[in-house]
Each structure stands twice: as C-alpha cells, then as structure tokens.
Length: 468
Image (cartoon, rainbow, N blue to C red; front, side, top):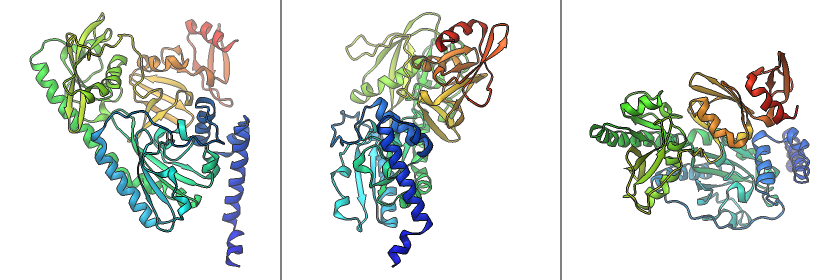
C-alpha cells in the first residue's frame, strides 16, 4: 500500500508526465522534428541536441563505446584543482548516497569516480571507469562533456541525454573555467537514477566549487606577477616595443612605445585578470593559443611572430619568450626583433584572426565567464570600448574590447557590420523596417522593434544577404 500511495502523489505524476513528454520530444527530434523539443526541453539541452544531431552527427541509438581520445597536452599545474574537485565529489557521494560522482579533465576524460555503497552492481559499469572519454562530440548530451561547454550547472534528466542507453540516468554537472583563457579546467558530475536527487544538487555544487574558482583566480594573479617581473627586466634594457602577455594573449604590461601604438592600454601592471580581459588583438591571442604546447614540451623554446597594425604601421618581427611560473608557462614576453632561426620557432601570419576560445565568444556575467556559441548571439552593440552582446540568454558584456576586434572574431561566422556601432547575426534577423530615404533598421525579435540601425553604405549588402 505505501508504494501505491507514493506512486500516485502529485509530484510523482508530474515527474512521469514530464519524462513522457521529454521522451516524445526526443523521439521526434531524432526523427528531424524540432517543434516538440522547443516547447518541452530547457534551452541548454535543446542547443546540445542540435549540436549532437547537426554538428557531430551522432547516432543516439548506437553508443560509441570507449572512444580513444587525442593525446592531451600535459597540464601539471591543474593537479591541485583536480584534487579539490575530487574532495567535492567524494563528499557529495558520502553525504547524499544513491549516486556516483566523477571528476573529468578539460577534455572530458574521467580521472576518478566515487560511488555510494547502496548502488547496485549494475550501476557500476565500464561507462564510468577512469579513462573513459565523454566529450559531447562523442558521448552526446551528458553531464560531463556538456558541462564543460557552459559556465552554469547543467541538469540532464533521463531522456534529456542524447544517447538512448543513458535514459535511465539523471545527472548534474558543473565545470570550472580558467579566468584568463576562459577554457574549462575540469568538471564534477553527479549521476543517479533519481532525477529529483540530482536536480537538487546544482546549487550545492556551485557553492562548493567556489574554492576551486578562487584557487584559479589566485593562480592568475601569481602568473601575472611573474610576467610583470620579467617584463620589468626586459623593458629596463630595451627602448622599443615590449609586451607582457597572459596565457590568453591579454596585455599584462606594455612599454611606452607599445601603449602609444595600440592605445587603450593603461600604464602599470594589470594583475587582476578581470582588468585585462579583452586587452588583446588577434595575433596576440594567437600567441596564447598556439604557443602553449611548444612551451610545455620545451621550456627553453622561443618563437617569432610577425605583427602589423595596431602594434606598428607595417608587419614586423617580434620575439616570443615564455615566462614560467609554478607548474609551467605563466605568460609571454613579446619584444622587438625575431627569435632564433630554428625549427622550433613559431611563425604566425600577421593577418591571423583565430579566436582563442575555439569557436566560442567569451562574455562577462559578474564573476563568471560565459562561453557563447556564435549562433546564440543575435547582435552586438558598442558603447565606447565596451561591446554588449544581446543573446538568447540575456545581455552581456563581451570579454573582447572594441567592436573592430569582435567583428574580426565573428566574421568567419557570417556576422555583418551594419553600422560602426552594431554587428548583427544575419541568421537571427526577423524584421526589416523601412526608415525612409532608402534607410532600413533591423530587429532580431519577432514581436519587438529593436531598431538596429543600418548605415547607408551597408544597406545594399544587407539587402543582398537577406534576399530583399
């Protein structure tokens, strides 16, 4: 009798209806019909499903098995972070029971797993063994790989998983991100048969992982101090351009000549990572993206970069020298003159526009860094050096400073510079309004006129792109 009563409680009936609706939406989505999913599943899950189906081409009916991951770049500096994540995971399992918890690295490989004594043997299979690889591109929507793609906790209930063989599980995952590079460092995931159990853990995980985030912020400041000390030594014996960069290519310190050339870089040392976010431009960001593996493999490595405006009026060769901190590279010194002519020298094209977040745009929300897919951004608006992004999740300040820099980052994704202060995603335009005298304004909202101005010289290109 108690079991029958429990099975008919309003909460139980609601949970069953929600699961049935989600399962139907999943079945329709897999068959190519998005409409039920749009009305049923949370936005982060829907975006993940679309990546699984449309980008990764994953078959939800056939598990990929134990995939072989690429060889990772060693990151001994993150060992302490993984220990902190492990302490959180072990505590949750011990205190909550009925669940298991994993810690993954930045590539979604399971480093360790803890399970409650009351879990059955069927729950402890090879899918959760250390060494198993769970990036979203391989494992579909899941609490480990999907968590690494966003800054907020992700709760995945039963059939919200992309893979059918995971539909009996519910999980909550949360990643910690490097405050300098905005890249994920690792994640904690808690999985159980009960959706209600894991859903209630999202806030707790966010609170308990704050210690790991604080550690990362302290490390970022220590790295900046190491870069500043090395910069001061270089600047004192040179009269030309010298830059101290963090691992993302943001400027920590700049010589007088560099600050005059670039503009907008304050004097002194920018130790707080929040103060230097976006103080970069494409070749500097490319240094941060491509030099890491070289410097880890060979601590004595130096490279060469060719940079044109705004650092100088014409392309010019500069030396890249790693600055080592605790556990590996802490940043870079860029100074006048080419590095040694050796096979290990890194030569970057002065026109490179690679984005250090690998196809995602970093935005700021309080103390957090949000990693946005270009498709989530509707339009961008400049306010002096700051750029504000209007997205599906709200309005956020871009980590990149300056509309010119952001336009270069987003140009590979088809964004249009329709006005000196506005950048628009053409795929999100919903309304075109005539303003008279041949001028038009745009809106990315069906119901509200956002009045995004289009300059006269951009009007023809906009009309062509929209086919009007």
